[in-house]
Amino acid sequence: MLYDPTEHRIRSFVTRAGRLSTAQARAFDELGPKFLIGYKKEPLDVAQAFGRTAPVILEIGFGMGDTTAHIAKLMPEKDFIGVEVHTPGVGSLLKQIGEQDIANLRLIQHDVFEVLNHMIADGSLDGVHVFFPDPWHKARHNKRRLIQPAFVKLLCQKLAPGGYLHLATDWEDYAVQMLEVLSAEPELANTADGYAPQPAYRPLTKFENRGIKLGHGVWDLVFTRK
Image 1: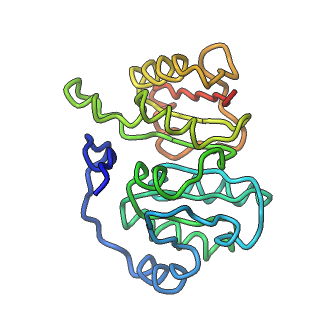
Image 2: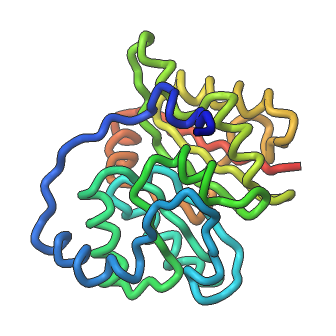
């Protein structure tokens, strides 16, 4: 058996049990067969999954999916793959896909490290979104943060030249770490002098609005692959 580094690492998430609402469970049953892609240790045929060839954006850890649905609806000319481990979030986004008639979105419920290593071809992504990943704010847990040099290098490998990486966080010390890690990656170039203005396509979440009213900051970073 080949050694798989994705199976011997510190995970950046904790799998939480969550109860599906009746509507979310129905979305799994009715929409899952079309919009859910099962994890396999083989390259994903993206054109077959969407029934067309278009720019592909990967979103990592979409939570309950509100932002993902908004962006996919806003950009029908692009195809979006959302990766999330938590079942209620997947159910929520499936429900929104049905309610909003979103055709350009597919979901994978699995660990993104394994998805990237086994299902996403090198140089095949036009963009990657990572919005508000778990900050693991206790110092002893910082090693669990998703944005680390090895992970960023893996994302670069999957991005096409000119493809972009857009991160956002509301934890300042995580923003500092993100900027340091991305700036140190030789394959990436910053589109701004430090942090980027919030791109128009990323909507403010209810948690952001609440934080802004309390005087909390939000930091966006947008880098492109050279």
